[in-house]
Image 1 (cartoon, rainbow, N blue to C red):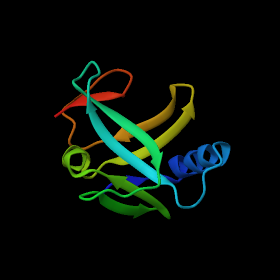
Image 2 (cartoon, rainbow, N blue to C red):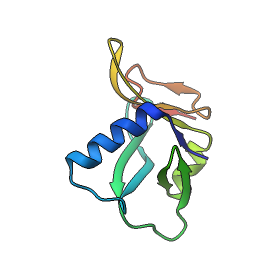
Image 3 (cartoon, rainbow, N blue to C red):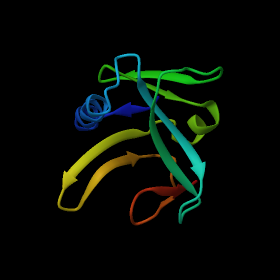
Length: 108
């Protein structure tokens, strides 16, 4: 499962409203090659579920992930922080063996 915290949900709702997106849009989380640790997180809004996608509901929000990315993201929690130590979405990924300083890339 992939889950989100209430703080992340609040920020996602703000971003959806700012972009004028409706309830049919959901969060798509994926992993792409790149970044200083080898793999990077990608977070987008989407309104189309593709064949093979994994679907989850957390905090009332629909989260979708392709199967290849899910292998890296199983058990991950998406959080949001706007504190002094950094602002933005944070992926708390139990599968990551190493992460970069900015938290945007990881290795397994």
